[in-house]
Image (cartoon, rainbow, N blue to C red):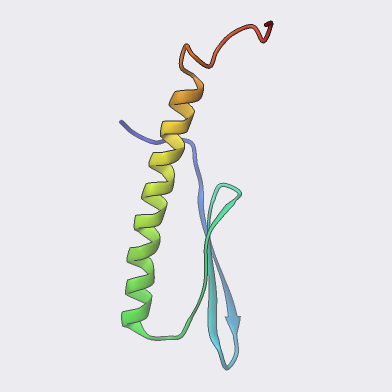
Length: 79
């Protein structure tokens, strides 16, 4: 099964003296917002965490979409 039709956006906002604020969106949904310092180990950990979180989000999204399109959820809206 493949997941299609989504956009991942990564925004970076430099924060002098603090580090950088990284925000990751899937379409319009803010998935992660985190302050990081220029530390390679922390950047790698955050990237691994974010990839895992994004994968789980997309799998859950796909499952919900499949449930909403099932026969049980379709109908005329008339009771």
